[in-house]
Length: 84
Image (cartoon, rainbow, N blue to C red):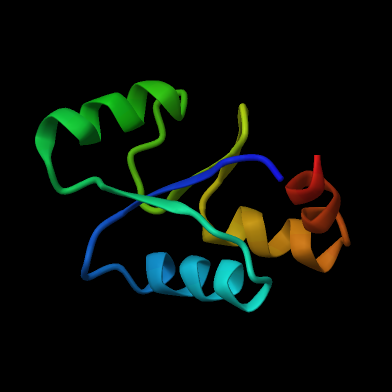
């Protein structure tokens, strides 16, 4: 299973929703605190300029935010990505 990283802030409801979806699927993830300015800058660079949280990475694939991950789930494309 690929490594999952999720950049979050404590107050973000979409971050909580993304983590809940991953937890429901039994997927372990590394949470990265995007409230730290240096980490936020690195996240923006890694996410091709996207500044919102969460930003989700599965392996080397930038999924995007919660809405993007939920769309993958609805299309049946999340599980194959997680199992690569």
